[in-house]
Amino acid sequence: MASIPRIRPQGLISNSAFSHVAIVPPGATTIYVGGQNAVDADGSLVGEGDVAVQSARALENAPTALAAAGATLATLCSGQCSFVDGVDLAAAYGAIGSELASDEPALVTGARVTAVGVPGALGEISAVAAVMR
Image 1 (cartoon, rainbow, N blue to C red):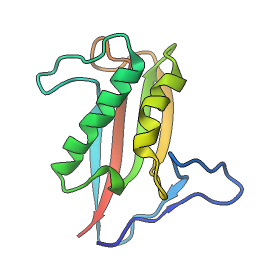
Image 2 (image 1 turned 180 degrees about the horizontal axis):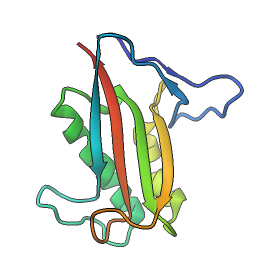
Image 3 (image 1 turned 180 degrees about the vertical axis):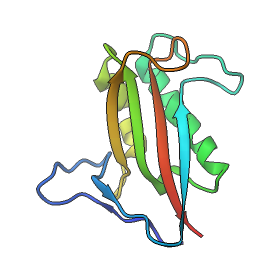
Image 4 (image 1 turned 90 degrees about the vertical axis):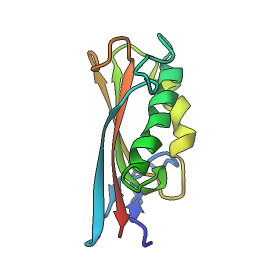
């Protein structure tokens, strides 16, 4: 399977947890993953009040969603991390950064929001992946 090139151009910050550009070539299948929260398979919130625990759980849920479409975290092109305003962003990103780190990490966009859809959830992670078929 050919890879999806991810680029960290010279002149922009270099970080092992994110890239700046991803190129999805012709023939790739693009996969969209809706917002993953810190909920278990029964829909119960995990880590109430703890953004690090919740961030880790939301990211833990992503591979399950990706696998349903034949993708993995390694095939991510980009991720959107939305965190409720006022949470400790260092704790949130600290809980997921090592899981996202690679030689060619996905693009990551962060946003502060007033709330996410699951009551008590402190953040949400959505993603776009691409796989060559």
